[in-house]
Image 1 (tube, one colour):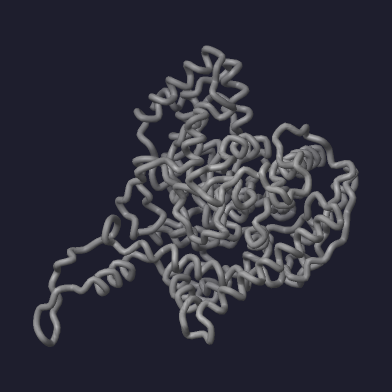
Image 2: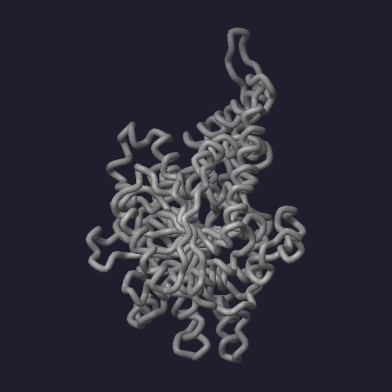
Length: 527
């Protein structure tokens, strides 16, 4: 403990890039970074950001190996030895999936997810697994494995940290890790990053493997990093991305014939600038419900981009309004199908299958159907039950044609994608900008818990207006935090989202770096 206290007297870095640079110079030791991480995890335990932390002894074995590489001048990568937190629904070998769902209680991952294998291969130090909404279903971090353990915002603990990747965002903001991984179905990386003042990347569908991820919605889910800078996002993304034979949807983008500009797929292109960059301003994003803070921020951002040489282009995407109806039709349907495998027969929540039940005829053995029904009733949380029941209803034969609503949703998605790509191609747009969410600051915990009108699931659905759209199109999006120069809204930053063309993740990262630089010079960045 004395060693940890001594470590904390140093000014330790809070980004991957800073930490790697100082470790290479020999200015800091890898052990000091891990000590700080562990200290923050234990001292700020009340945030409920972690559910499973690796032992100090196990971590220190990896620390020694990493330090030897730095001492010899041969670190494996820019993340070698640096503490990273992982959302609980991503497999880390031999670690429990505690927070993903009660139905998985006690289940230990038999393998590393592909993204974890790639991070470990470059020396990343996985410090632990983070809390989340069950199966990724939630926007506030309040539907976790234990309803008493709501994930609190490190900026102000009276507020939510977002969801569903709330624990991953809180861990980075609380300096419990230098970066983290979350998963995103309709804003589950973007919104927590917004609430905690972080950068996040929702990559193009298929750029990061989901092998080893507990899926919620197969056609929407992606894994995405959260960090304090765009450089850190770039480092993590470049290590994790790439084709994976274990995930048929994870492909080599260089082999796609219909790509707008192949150079934009590459990490080799220079940083560039904002001069001549064409930015789409979508008229359908200016909705009546948008609050004054985010509306003003959009105007300020437009001026900043123009001052840096960007060209603003007014565009229309009329089908944006169908993104949420599509999302809440197809996603529950896929969820009910994906979650049907969790039946308590092989692992997780179980009870004695041979237990007898009393009936009018006397003692009878539990039937298999009754057993599965009881396991799922006891283990699934309220939000998961809502979405599974809705999904089963949408997939049922109640409609004139079996699955007709789901088929209609898939047709709508195709139209949304075609419209989006057409606008980007015809106007030669590099990116579009939008708010992340409606609301001046994150919701206050006390104002949501216990108030039936706020706990109504429709309240959360409305929050996904901007964040569900990139998942509907499968295109990359980056959340960028920003703070007004006068800080008139207090301690919480707001943020905005930039969204690009399918596959152009590196191009979007280059633009995000230039925007981050411009915000710093304007003293509007949030660190």
